[in-house]
Length: 174
Image (cartoon, rainbow, N blue to C red; front, side, top):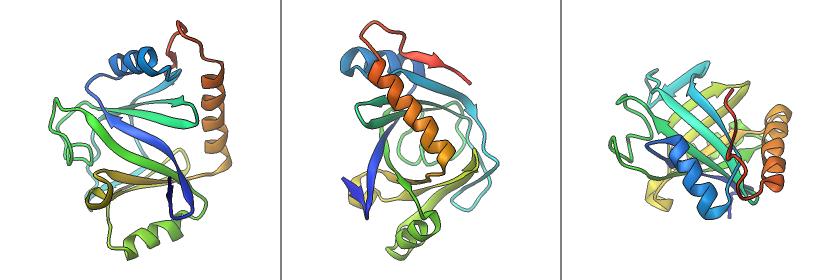
């Protein structure tokens, strides 16, 4: 699967409890290990034109070549996650693609008529979430691919290649 010429590399799920979800996915599918980013904050952030930023934690791990991301929203702040799921609900939220030319891909999606629902700058990289629910039932994230991000993701994928049943599915929390 691709977005234009970019392969989909990530599936993301809103969950009620990161650790519970990590352990379930590890047991069922062999996903992991996962890195948890608690109460993640960004340097710049907009949600539908406002600067409101929800209190969210993330977990990142791999299942084969697919990155699996879990998102837990800790508050009731309006967000792209609450756009799809009320507090207490869980489910598939978005697909993600790594893009070389972030500005061009952002403009391509805008030109196609998709709303840029959320945009952020964190860890020296741009990301944006487009509301593509009318096409694929979820949001679509475009994420820049600078070398430091590719190295981090490669390390997580390599950790998955060495991951064995019974290993701790949580490797670190920054």
